[in-house]
Image 1: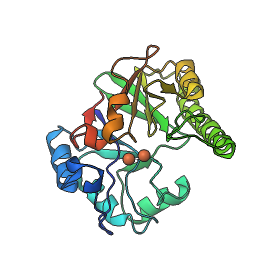
Image 2: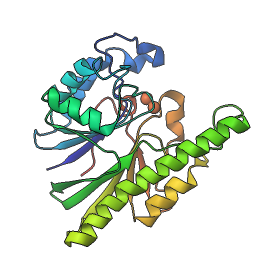
Image 3: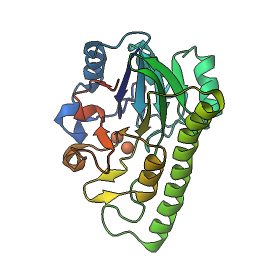
Amino acid sequence: MSIFAVGDLHLSLSLPKPMDVFGGEWEGYVEKIRLGFASAGIAAEDTVVLCGDISWAMNIREALEDFRFIDALPGKKIFLKGNHDYWFETAAKTRRFFEENSLAGFAILNNNHYEIETDAGLVAVCGTRGWLNPETGTGKLTDEEIALNIKVSAREVIRLENSLKSASDHSAKTGVSFAETLCFLHYPPVLGSDANSEMIAVLHKYGIRRCYFGHVHGKHKKLAPRSPVGGISYSLVSADNINFTPVRVI
Ligand SMILES: [Fe+2]
Ligand SMILES: [Fe+2]
């Protein structure tokens, strides 16, 4: 079985939202996603990690049409939350909604991990939404904004550690060893000369070698790392950056 990643589908099937304002590549993007999944070589038993910004819906009922579209695409899906996923309630409520609507191939990455048997061996899938460097941003941040960002970032660092620890604890308890532990985030821990050092410290603590993230669009794409930083390779998989075609991770 294989693992694929794609972020930022930004679906809005129940309430059409013009995405072409974000750039010409978004014109006809729903069809591009359908074609991208079809051409990526994803088998039904493969897994696709959706790295956040999945739907513009403001509540989970409104997102159902987007979920049905995603469900019809090949592969099982692991969701993680992006900054635009306002539909996401608690993980428990979201899982219940998936169950009630027979979305059996959907799973949520939230303080947990998944184990997937691949051709390279058993792989742990970990991750969370993440956060950028809390002390920087576009424009000058006020002290209040920085204080809030530091709080949000600290919470995300804990969630990342919970997910990675879940995999390593399971391994220690059962003796199962992973060929690799992969990390999926929405926000990039590294972007240009900016970095979230606390998030990166956790990645190093758990020996992560590959990290996949979304969130970054348009002119900011060029800030995504092109080669490993501190021994970790960071790959930008926002849909518009990968021609709406999920990237094969393993
Ligand atoms: Fe985002
Ligand atoms: Fe996005």
